[in-house]
Length: 599
Image (cartoon, rainbow, N blue to C red; front, side, top):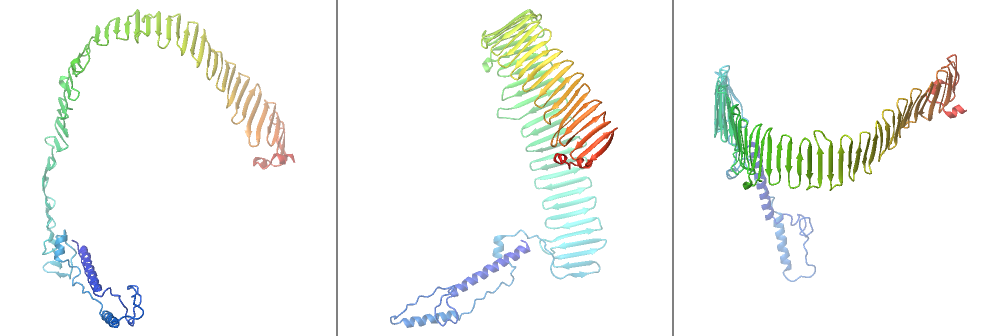
């Protein structure tokens, strides 16, 4: 228990004792506030005592005697002195019975030294103050003691500048720097001598010979590392790992993997609840074996031989030539058998189908389908004959016929002369000189030899005669091309028209701008603040233009010319500008207006 806590606890006991004494005295006084001195024996209301209700009027005999007795009692109470409480001699002292009940964890604490300091200077310097001691004879030794003569005595010293020693209830140290260390920290003991270290503690230890061997043990695990043996290992309840030269072993809970790389590998998940998995791999022998208990699956690979067993089927392959599958109907599989010997044949049979494949021939039959394929003639029936396909070929396709009664679709091909297909959704007709493709209610395209294409859909139409003419519309956009002399493209945003090489026109509807070139004429229009600005040139002879604030014209680029912008007027003679009125700076700053020019 710390000194501060003792002081606070003793003060609390004093306050409790004082409060108890005060309550006892108050009880003896009957509340201490029944009547006030100097009241003349009258009962007056106060804040601590209610007003006494005396009877008014004549009273029976003996009432005067009772009143005199009550007055005498009140006088006796008022003459009693105030109670006093005697404080404890040592307010910091904790009574023994209370100390036993609350306990303390501060028996070995060493506090600050108290009392006067006593010093001696010969034959050594020493200093003492309460439980503190200091002895030194430089440079031979210095020793310090705290808690001298008590169970918590702590002594430490440095001798000969190399040996350090300490003794205390919890810590012991012996150090001969830098060769030897012996340390005790409560129940933890450590000894270090050069590269050798030994540590002992309850339930664990460590032994090191650095950097050759490191070994240790804990309550729930340990470790071992050896550089000469090229070995490293550590273990715990939830896992372990060991590696030594080519050998390794790893454990995670019950799952274990081990091996000697690259010769042998083995693993086991250790599951004992019906989901066990194990494997073995031997790379030099091209051998691999795996078992899975949950689905009763076993796989073995030995060179080119592959064997797999499951409750449903058994597989045996000799790669890459022989393949076989056998069903196990007795254990949940189906009755089936498949055998392949490449490249000679494949034969498979089951309760639902048969398949035979040999070079140049394939035949497959199921309850709902029948397929027959050869290089010259093939047919296929599906959905119990609802759909059929006949092909003369396919190496040299001459005849193609397909029908589907459920969807109403049919197709006929006599190659290379005709192909046609029809269904409720679409139709196709194609010959070497004509083609028609239609999706009902959506689009229609017609092609005619050599290069005419007419198409129409829900967004517009297109008429093309490759590579000369292209015309069409898509939603709000149109185009017309007569290569190589005329191009016209129009949309809601603008229009481009080219009559090569004498006419060019570009219009942008977003800003109402136009640029047009026709022979040697040029027209430019654009939007400016206040309206439109335009200019027209007959190159190189004459130019004219107009803006919201004025107009201008030039002959031969300025041989003669005129310009007016609001109140500003200028002429040109022999390419020299002459200002007639106004200021060019005012025009540049936008200070003039159409109204000013009018006046």
